[in-house]
Length: 490
Image (cartoon, rainbow, N blue to C red; front, top):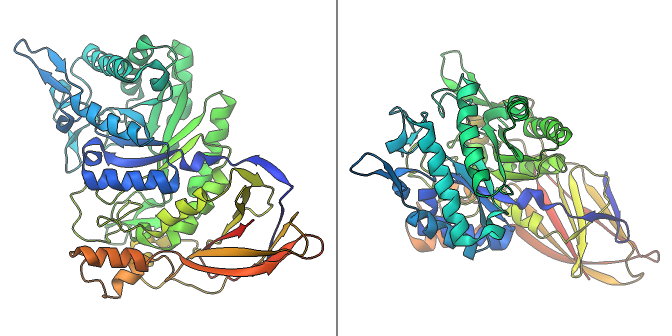
């Protein structure tokens, strides 16, 4: 029997909501679409996200850079204004990914993604610095210094990855890009926050810290990315995605977060999820909810924010998706149906502002004026799985250890109402529900609405009475990879 013993009077401190500070989107152009913004607005209300990070800020569809008759670059930020105005109006601030290279400034025609993001160096580094400076001056004039001081400016995306930078083997090339951008940001206001290297796999962190210190280049935070899966190959040489351990992301964040703290710099994780593939079944699976909570709890105190990749399955790196559930990164599918991982974020949002001491590493306990909350999960995974295949089938769903919950410091003899919400197999599980065939292909509006209604977390209410010592006791029966939120109403 697993025991979660807490007391209303044993306060740990304020809940660290680093887990909900940021969410990601694929690119700026996707955010300009009504359904994606509608999903983001919902997530802001229900999950409490404060920032958003995305690619493509300077991409051609944002109409930022054009050359005039004299071949000099001219800048327009009208589309960025439309986007940022809307984001700020719903309470979301940008993490501004500075890059990648606008086509009219690029040294090469080297592209990645269906929507063609240029990954080459600028033909003229001075023009790159001028673009960044003009952009930062513009947002300062539009939104004011006090507002922009709260933003983050991140230079590039995964410069150590061959898909995202032509000079991925050359740290010095990235440092030149970083230096020009960082000095441009600070040239507008020395208090603005700028950081990098936005690397894949927590790489280049020591390198950028050393570079900035040795060369007097400003850096205010470290950014990097971490995914739970690794690439591998089958006997025929075909690429497969392998998840070898539950704690890969957590271990990377803890090790590098400690390193960053020792250097006086916060770690900002601007991409993370269980898999780096936008067609990996794990993202749709109920397992992902327990995986998310397991990872975030173990990263507490090591990252300033962790931005899950991404908000929506309306995401077009490979190509626009065509099926409702295709292993997309999104918390919400194309038709607006929230996945289990989305509901895990709403469970976190339900925690009160004061955390209670709890010795269980797979649980949170908290309180607010409205009541107390216990959020508990279990995660089970074989030591190694081929992600797409494993989660496409019927994974083990045996009974996990029951949880005996006791909450002290309450009124002796008083009967309390407990609301229990559950995520697991067949509970808040739209993918499994969709596979039943009862909802067609979700082409009809009522089909998607019915699926969303049928795949909400399972909710039950029961009463429990505190004993003579003021302790409330109840038991949560759990199966593998299940998540339970128990809300005790005061």
